[in-house]
Length: 66
Image (cartoon, rainbow, N blue to C red):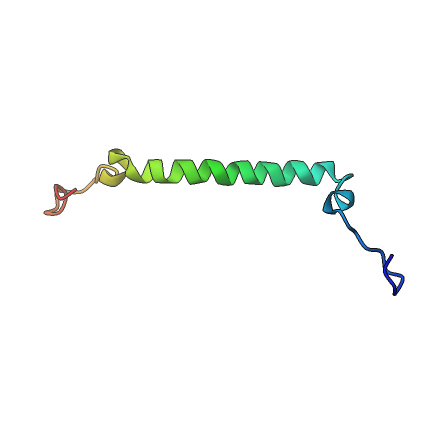
């Protein structure tokens, strides 16, 4: 307690010690963000992604530019 009678949390771990489910959610979100940080650049460098899907219409002059 401080001089005004308010509770002071000295260690942040004491406050979150009993929040197990919230910890699972935060860790899962962190793992998903790391996975996206690895996958997105890999997908963007993939030649098939750069080329795109086959067009259904006739050939266009810029089809062979990629």
